[in-house]
Image 1 (cartoon, helix red, strand yellow):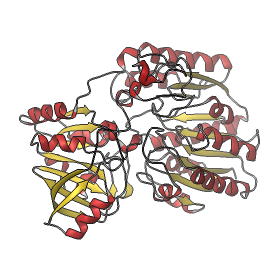
Image 2 (cartoon, one colour):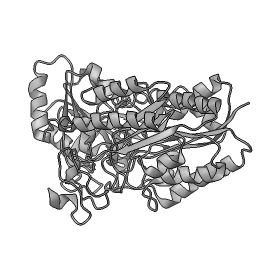
Image 3 (cartoon, helix red, strand yellow):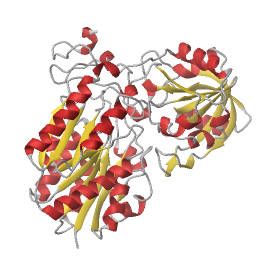
Image 4 (cartoon, one colour):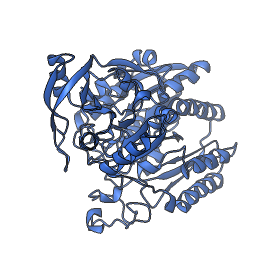
Length: 506
């Protein structure tokens, strides 16, 4: 029987974010399932939208014996601590070494992990795995669409396959694609040629949505290029908030011949570069966005949904800034917003009880310039233990645990407050505290794009607002120091030079 070792270790690192990822963050998981070990990995990684779950499904259908190691993921943040990285990778390696003979390894990775001691977290993971298994055992990994892919990652893996949707509704499908590709490698017993291209400009995440152009057309072309000669081809937009050499978009292709791989990679790289002018759009200030939403809501039959993009916890935000909440209250809007991460305020709401009015210093505790706690009196409308299922297309049925949570009201604005961070990308993240999202005039979600998978069908219009937060809608505003020389820090933006951090370039 074919024996495949499997595992997962995912983190998207914003090196400019306020909070690092500790081991306990991976134990809890945030928007990811809680950390699981050994045989429990195969119990948890089923029927959810995760790369490892998709791989397990196809592997078992193929009759493969799976050797599980560890599965861990945490909400995006600043660097993964050295202690967390070493402990999780050590467990993965120990279980791999104890597994006995194996035929291949599959890993579910993100591709944009930066640790306190390794700029290229995935490159280090793959290098250590390769040292254990040697050069003859196939090593395949799935990656996020936002992977910052390095030459080292390409070198150590036999294949890397990235998601093709943002919102990421194809995470499990990408795991299945990895299983199919691994089956090909095991059947043919030969390696494929690799081609890797790093592109010359950073792309803001707000304009990476694959249901819109130009991303939609790029991925349609990419899929059409796959064939027997090009078994798999990927384009990763990159995560433009990780200050190291390999931050940025990339294309990677695997072909029967080097000429096949090079031609496919060059075709997609040229296509992406031809759309540099198109990776841009309108972003509103908090007051502009709220006022426009209020105007549109007067004739709308469905909610106006606003992305609070710069405090997106899916991009390293602490999910606690108050700029959009202040704008809603200041303009006397009617609607709901969340999730504000504030364990202290959630605890105070639970202590006060439903129906009480409680004065809180809500949010604003992560020290973001231009932000501060919002001191006001709030009515406690509903309390929750924070446990619920998120059935929408992004979370895909995951069990969520937001910890002690509350619905607070100020004026005609309702606020979801939780004790853990997770991107508001599912309607259930309102309903679990008694807010019916479809009945609101305005919804303000701490998210950039993932929310669209579940909210676009119920939205009249989508708007993007930029309140203070650690994930700028414009990457050129970040104080870059370590990018590779020459990369443009935004579409058609200035080129980075090591002696001139981006902030001084404009």
